[in-house]
Length: 128
Image (cartoon, rainbow, N blue to C red; front, side, top):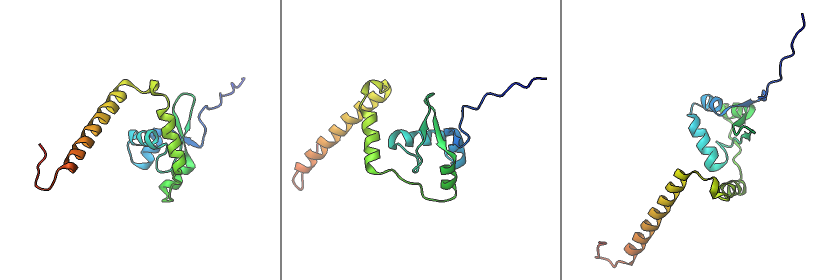
């Protein structure tokens, strides 16, 4: 009887999915994804982005974090580069996120103009 060779696994043995990392660290997967999206890391853990757009997290780093070792936080230059990369292509920004960003910018501008008006008031005056 001829044995059929098994296809090699496409998933590296030392890598975990976002769901597995979240389960190991007792958080929701969306918490891990949000942190990576905004900061470029999750408690110092930086994943490898696969061709399928999924994230592969190093199992050894996750184990060290669970053991209580401090995660290696990326420096400010790495964080700035991550944010610049995200902001460089606004065409990729989903429409609902673009609407939220525009609303927040408008809200911040209104709050800043209100704060400026309140600063110009003399003592005893009340903002209308």
